[in-house]
Image 1 (tube, rainbow, N blue to C red):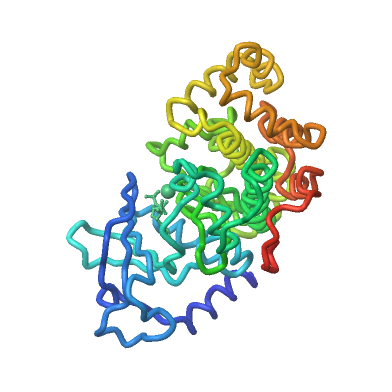
Image 2: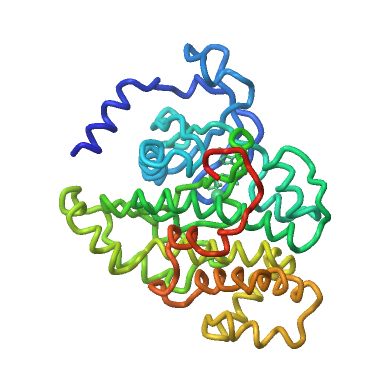
Length: 357
Ligand code: ADP
Ligand code: MG
């Protein structure tokens, strides 16, 4: 009850933006369920601060599934605001020619997703510069790259831990859905379009929606059928902690995060083809990373060997962490919280002057 009440009170006191409050800019993305634009507050809008700078906002025009995405973003804003892009407002826009549309507004966090950054020849040094705002004088090499990747993984896991502690499973964790926030100089999660809220049982993935198969854990189909779809709130609140324990649905995201870790350490696995080929190999090894390593290491390219070398630093704690995340059985994967306490993160990462580090 208190959650719904809070949501109601918050709604009362937030500005109620309308369609004509916004001017659309460049298109940033287009998926099956929505189009995303960079946007500004219109000159005619009566709302001024704090969204008055040009292109300060991001606007998503979503289909009927936008309602769930608004719910998730409002939950995140109240419970774990630092985990995700700053959500401003969401509303039903019914005057559109296309019929019912939901409009979602966020603050514009910056121009790069982890996907963009990972596909630069400079990676991971380009990220180091963005996080620190300066160029390091230390020599380039494995140690330094490991430190940068460690810092990125810590930020991603920190954001995931926030979501999971709130009872939200993202279900579409991938580099394209991780944005670098230029304001806080940290990575944040975006795109809660496929997320499930287990505390209240809100879990809606339309039949035609396929989770991204490149990053999905092997239990992808089981999860969407075992989780009840939006039962009445009091029942769900009583049941869902049990459900959470039984299925450990948060570990679905951990698998995806593990694949991101893998892609950061092995440049050859960053491309679609590289990742798809890896997934095929891993499946053939019954999702046993150690078996995969045994099968590829003897004839590994210098690129692959470099990745293993990086994960083998400090007695192989990187490899240990990776193999605790990418496992067939959800119950054997580490939680985000446990991963953050893993010895891999005990060593100093980038020295970032931020309370979140
Ligand atoms: P979808 O994947 O459903 O098209 P997303 O929510 O992932 O929609 O957004 C699409 C793209 O728009 C992202 O990959 C990112 O490049 C950009 N984007 C989304 N939200 C923000 C934001 N708050 N700040 C900056 N860019 C964003
Ligand atoms: Mg996306």
